[in-house]
Image 1 (tube, rainbow, N blue to C red):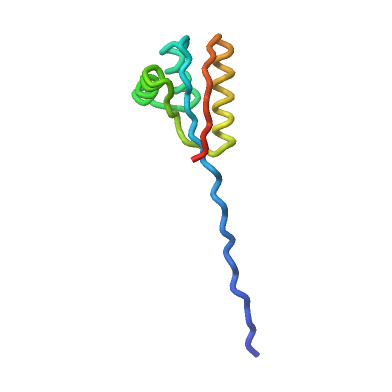
Image 2: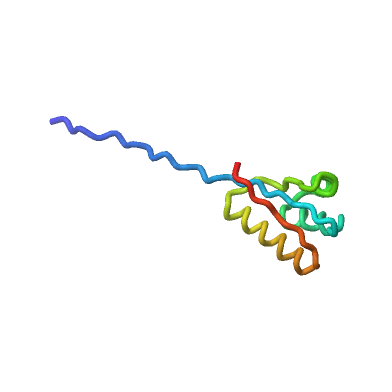
Length: 97
């Protein structure tokens, strides 16, 4: 007697949505604070942090990275908390890709 087996169907896993985290310029933000945020929160190298900081200060915004929602939200919250502690009104924008 031959046993018939059902083919296993592979479940397609839905990839989590990815969000861009962007720093939004505040005319009172300092170069040093922006560099510190980028190196400590986003783990950017000094060279990358300098490039992003220049973008923030000249164009009004700079993309810090792409993360799944929970990580992006945590990084944005951390940045805004640090900014509030130092009396800056720096904000992060989360945009789904």
